[in-house]
Length: 122
Length: 122
DNA sequence: GAAGCAGGTCACTAGGTCAC
DNA sequence: GTGACCTAGTGACCTGCTTC
Image (cartoon, rainbow over all chains, first blue to last red; front, side, top):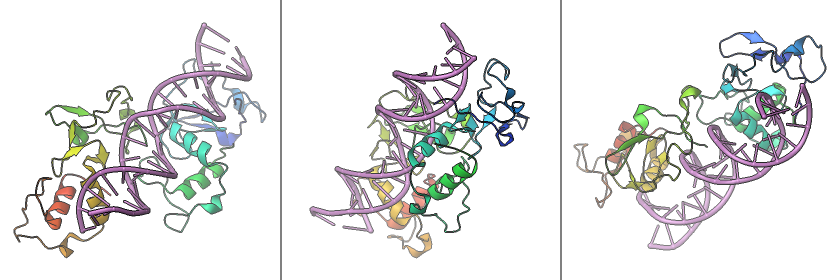
């Protein structure tokens, strides 16, 4: 667990308030510049709800599987990461369903694809 | 899903004893901030039979299709939600049939209309 | 010790099933 | 067609490990 961290610019934190900062945890590697945000840097108190999930835009409070993600996408990805995407069926057959948090019945296939696309890594 | 959490006023729980509490689950969407109801808040033990169906006044034990509804109205709505109401015929032609649980043959059209009116959402 | 995250747990509900 | 029961998916919260 833990450390996941890799930070790529792609991992700039997407704040709910539309700011962007890079807060990747320590991890790894990429340019260290991006990773700067240390825990303390990003203000000692983790801006708990200033982050937004890269998958569904819901409030997030940190990294899960190497990406800023919310509790529900984290759980979703945990359950489905190992499942072959092909086994899932898109609700609309066009594979571009909206999977944002405010959508009632989110397409599992599209949600899983978006997780992968956004860099969630199990 | 979840714990339910969010509470919208329309979703205040209608208790049999005439109390109201809000226990909405997350449903959807609203801002996640609202979702705070914790498990314990909504009383740890969901007051299983204190709820009454908004459609037919039968005992309910939680939300179905975004409204406090009983098992039978849930099944009814699931089967008929997508059916055009116009295709149904009111048993009395006045479209105000009593659809409470103690009525023997409930008018399908009026029952479906009441479901919609009470906010059941598929 | 504090903080962050992976994984576990469990209340809750949508949808399926089936006797009637 | 109805309604009771069952099952699987969801998401909030919890637990434990790791790092600082």
